[in-house]
Every structure is written in C-alpha cells, then in structure tokens.
Amino acid sequence: MIVPTQTVRLGDRSYDVVFDALSGLGAALAERRRLGPCVIVTNDVVGPLYAEAAAASLRAAGFTPSTLTLPDGEANKTLAVWSGLVEALLARRVDRHTPIIALGGGVTGDVVGFAAASALRGLPLVQVPTTLLAMVDSSVGGKTGVNAKEGKNLIGAFYQPVLVYAAMDTLATLPDDELRCGLGEVVKHGVIDSEALLSGLERDGASLLARDPVATARAVAECVRVKAAIVSQDEREEGLRAILNLGHTLGHAVERCLGYGAIRHGEAVGIGIVAEARLAELRGEADGAFRARITTLLRALGLPVDCPSLSAAELVAATGMDKKRAYGTLRVAYPIECGRVRLDAVTPEELHEAALVISAREEDR
Ligand code: NAD
Ligand code: GLY
Image 1: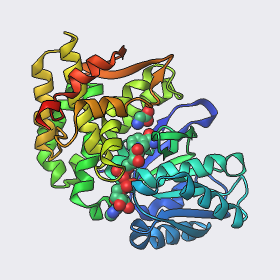
Image 2: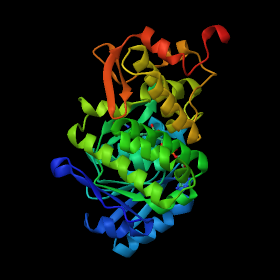
Image 3: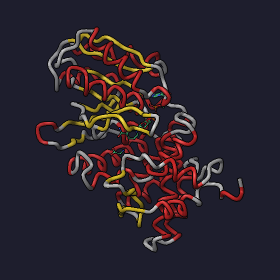
Image 4: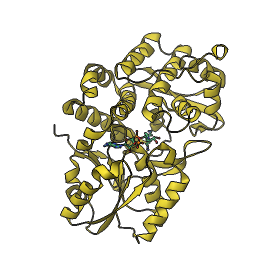
C-alpha cells in the first residue's frame, strides 16, 4: 500500500512525514538537504538490524554517513546518555548543516532529538522511527527530551525535525510486545479523533496484531493525520495539543511507580485512558459504556487495562510532578466520547477515585 506523504504545517519550519522502505531514506533526504556528512544515531538493538542499510541508502544518495550507538531502553533515556551523545557529536565536528538521523523507537527519537536541539544550538534532525509507537506519535511534533528522577520527560525541548521518514519495512522485526505497545497510542488517536477511526480499529484489531501491511499502513497514516493537524495548530501545547496527553497523566504515574522500563509506555497509556474515562464518568460527563468500549478494545489488542500491584494513593502521589500542571492545579485530559476530549483541572480526590478502577484498593493490599 502506498501511503501519501503528509506535512506538518509550521510555516517555514514545515516538514514532511514520508512512509516508505528504509532503502529510500537517502533519496528522500537528498531531495530536502544538501549532500555532505550526516550522523546516524541508533541503539544497540536497532543498530545491528538497520544501521548499515540506512548508511548504504544515504551513501547511494551521495551523503557521507557515520554512526553512533546508544544503549537501548527507557532506563537509558537520561541526562547522562544525552550529554555523552552531545559530546560525541561535537567530537565528530558536526556543523549546523549536518543532518542527525535518529534511527530507532521513541526513546532514541526523544534523546537524539534533544541532543540535536542542543548541540551547536540546533542541528537538522531527521526522525526515522522503527517502532509503531514512534511512527504514530513520538517522531512527529517535535517533543524531545529525557526523564528526570522527579518524573518522565521533565527535561527537554520542543524541537521540530526537518523530515520524518517512517521506515515501514522495519516493523517486520519489531517484537510482538512492542507492536502491541504502539497500538496503545493508536487507540489514543482513535479516541481523540472520531468514531470512524475508533470503529476502524475495532474492525482491524486482528489484522493489526497479525501485521497486515494494509491495516498497519492505514492506522499509521490516520494517526499521523490526527497528530500533524493538532501540532500544526498548537506546536507548543498552549491549548489544543494537550489533548494528545490523553492517558498520560495516570499512564506516566504507572510508569513512574513501576520504574522506567518495567512497563512499556504504550501499555501505560492504555491503562491511563481507562482511568481517565472513569474520571469522565465520575464527573457525569460520560457513561460507563464508553469506558467499557475502550477497555474491550484494549483487551482485544492484547493490552493491559489495570495495574493491580499499585494503589490509587501511590498513583496520585506519582502525578505530583506531572509537567501538565499549570498554575498550581493538575489539568487532566479525559475522554467524554469518541472525538471529544476535555482538558480540565481535577482535584487529587477525584483522581484518586478514578484511579481506583485501575489499581488495587488500599484495603486489599
Ligand atoms: P523504544 O524506543 O524503547 O523501543 C522499544 C524496543 O524496540 C527497544 O528495545 C528498541 O530498541 C526496539 N526496536 C525499535 N525498533 C525496532 C525494530 N524495528 N525491530 C526490532 N526492535 C526494535 O520504545 P517506543 O515504544 O518506541 O517509544 C517509547 C518512548 O517514546 C517513551 O520514552 C515515551 O516517553 C516516548 N514518547 C514520546 C513522544 C513524543 O511526542 N516525543 C510521544 C509518545 C511517546
Ligand atoms: N505525545 C504527546 C504530544 O506529542 O504532544
């Protein structure tokens, strides 16, 4: 299936999102940047699989690529890895025209993006996502950064890439668990966008799990359409973009409580959406049928819908440093119905009540 190129529209910083095989990366970049040195930054899982193919494509197009390799995993999304990368880029004598190519999943994209934002005050960043999650979400929109001990993604920058090149054929080697995790973010986009997208996911669930290329390409393209439209209207999350944080307030709390890397991000987002749907119910803004529908879909996609090893109190405490806090209140995105997400201040008591649906009750622990 040929997926048309999409564009994130941000004036003179607009950029394309191209969906194609990894072998076309060099040609796509050559259409947009002048030839010269470039640096592929990957990790020690993706590198052995794809760094040479990426380099070969870039060489064939006339670039001179070199490669840097980071340690894999969320536990390495740290300031230490970021600073080591910035220094390694400087040691390679990059200049402001040297494309930095982030080849990997969301962790790679976030760390490399932040390094590209900061080395020499900004190097051209190319996101080459190789996980479903990174294709549908993290590679698009310019959020970059690392985790802090106080919370997830608390250190970083908005820094848009010059190109996103979704290397669709790399999904062939993505482990099943990682594929499912990407589906958590796909469900998020379905809930945010429309009945058509959510019911399409309900229809295509089995095909997505079976890696059907047509269903996968359709889901990726739809999610990028949703995200690109939102980012084009609100690049720096001054309003509308905050709806993309659906599932993240309690999802990040789950990740923080369990320890970064102990649960996959997309899994945690799915659990967070269930709790935030419960919040909507508690406020009388949604009925239980909508939460039941989301829960059924997540289960059908093989995703968890609760975290019984945690208590609601722990989860609420873990939201204390959530960066979505503004002016001293905790603003939470929660789903009212398909295509309608509300962003509003909530009290810790409300959040606790909502979190009970995904956690162990204190008295049961
Ligand atoms: P990840 O980057 O850790 O990738 C998951 C695993 O799959 C890793 O072990 C990785 O090396 C491996 N892998 C990647 N591509 C592969 C392939 N093609 N074949 C085989 N193995 C492959 O995790 P992720 O789920 O891609 O991303 C999660 C991260 O993204 C989190 O840190 C989250 O905070 C971040 N995120 C950022 C944004 C944003 O807007 N910047 C949005 C959503 C999520
Ligand atoms: N993943 C949330 C955002 O990009 O805004």
